[in-house]
Every structure is written in structure tokens, then in C-alpha cells.
Image 1 (cartoon, rainbow over the protein chains, first blue to last red):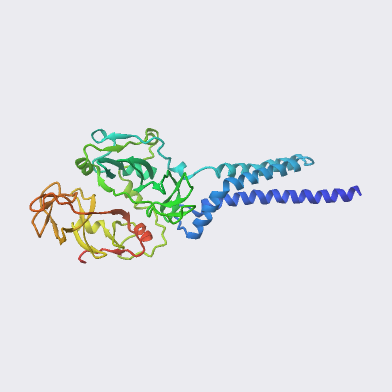
Image 2 (spheres, chains in turn brown, red):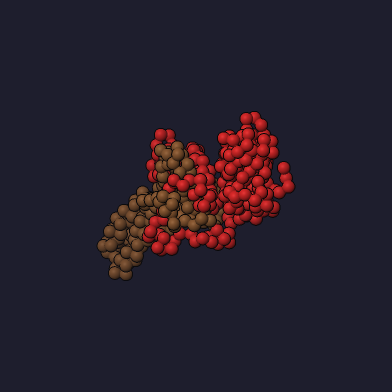
Length: 171
Length: 237
């Protein structure tokens, strides 16, 4: 009788381990797919973009749910596990913690850091721009602003208000 | 350059991805994704909406300075400049070697990364290669049945587009030789016009040509987002 109960318990533990593996793999796929689908220098499709958008929108919640579920499972499996099995449990949690964090990051802004506090110089004092450098230029209600292309090629997006109009300069 | 007010709300944009080498912006307020080159929301709650374009120029700093001595210029961020992350002066030549990814069917007439000036008028789109403008400026043309002209300044880098109908009369222009800054002369009245499209002497003095938005772009990028575009070739009228 003890033996039978032990066998049943073992089966549940196996299912527990399998569930843990599946949770970790799913979380990895959810976070990795949009990164792979929207790589530079690869063509994108409408379908790929729709999938990426859905995954990017949901991944902060899904990864958190996966992490909580995995922690509960690990807690349950911890008791009665040998030391090497416990190491495996911890190692399996590491990628899950990593993707839960990554799902809250904008890795495109790691490569091109946004301009936190945009500052401007008077035309006559703008010694950081060369005469032959290109600028994006707007003039609204008598106010003129120029955004040097060399700066725009890095930031890509600069928010401003010119002549009372809120705008975004993009390049 | 886009106005950021949408449905009465000012949106704040972040770089959020890339779609066929044109970047995607995400707005903080709704989380929608916007295509930079078209200003259209392509995913999210605002999908299908368009940002209003803001008229702008792409000019050399020297030309802009001459026209706007009282303007203001975006400063570099000190930390990013110190890290040497801003583009160098020859960045466009280096970028010319970067591979191209596009779903557009390209013309054999022009290389994918050739620089063009893209123009829309009355629903029609046309790309004018920089090389063609360097050989012939102004280019006198008609696009979507609108008489237009594309002009390169004497810095050989700044380009503007104009409609060339004034008071119901179509004008033809040529560049006045050997003067700087650039002056255009119209064949019909003999008036002189400056690069901002204003008549500065002659019978039309004080008149202003209507500006036409132009986009400096790579041929492949323009073609990807304007699939029906035609390509201007020298000698064609």
C-alpha cells in the first residue's frame, strides 16, 4: 500500500517537473519571438508584426504569471528532492527571471538611447554643427528650430513644441 | 516630422522596433505602434489612424542659418557625444554599404540605396534621383496633373519642391547663372525668385510659390512605402 502511494506520488512529481520545463520554454518563446521577428536587416511581414505586437503587449503579464507558477512548482518539488535536483530547479528559474525582466525592457532604446532633456542653442552659438551638415528644419508661427541629422540618426525620435505646436521630429 | 496631437491627446513617442528598415515608434499613452515614414498606426488601439504631417525642410546648416539667423538648434547630449555614439561626418557613405532588406520590387534603373527626393502630389508619387538633380536643376515636371518644380540649392545638397502655378499662370524656371545664393528666373515674367520660393525682383516681386513637401530617402525605402511611385529619369518630361 505504501509502495502504491509512493508510485502515485512519483507520477505527480514527474508531471510537476514536466510542467516546469514547459512553462520555462513557453516564456522563452514568448519573449524571444518578437526579438527574432523584428530584427534589422531582415524583411518583416504584416503577420509577423501583428504577432510581435501581441507578444510584446502580453509578455510582461505572461512572464510574471509564468514566474509565479514556476516558483510554486519549485517550492513543491524542493521538498523531497536530492541536492543535484535542487540545483537543476534553481538553474531552471534563472532564464525565467531573465525573460521576466527583459519583457519590461525596450532593447531598441539600449542601442539608441532617447534624449531625456532636449536642449537647444541659438543659431550663432551652434558650433557643434558643421556648415555642410544637414539639418531637419521647421518654422511654425515665426519660430524656427533645426535638428542636426547626425544627432537624429542616433536618437531617431525627438519630441518638441515649436510655435505652440507639439511635434515629433523623426529620422 | 509629425504633429503629436491625436484625438485631442498629445502622444509621446519612443523607438520601438523596425519594419523593413523603417523604424516603428510606440506611444506611451496608448501603446500603439506607428510607422515612422508614413505616420500611420500599424498595430494597437489606434491602428489605422494617421499623424498629421508637419512641413519641414532638409537643408545644409549653412543655408538654414542664412534663412533663420534667430532660430534654435538641438544640442547633442554630452554623455552620448563623449561615448562617440553620434554619427560621424562621413556616416552617410558608411551607411551606403549596409545591406538592404525590402519587400519592394526594385527597378533595375536605380540602385537600392541611391538617394532620391520623394514627392507626392494629387495622389501620385514620384522619386527624383539626387544624381539627376545634380545634373539638371530645376527639374520642371508635372505630377498628378500638378505643374511642379524640384530645385537643388547651390550647396548641391538642399532640395525643395514647389508648385509653379502663380495666379492661374504656369511658369517655367531656370537658374540664373553665376550668382550665389541661388536665384531662379521665370521665362514668362522675367522675375527673380529665391530658394524659399519668393519673388525678390521683377514684375512678380512679393509673390510666393506654394511649397511641396519633399522627402530625402533611399530609393528602396521610398518604393517600399510608396509602391505605386514612378521614377523620374533625365530627359523625360
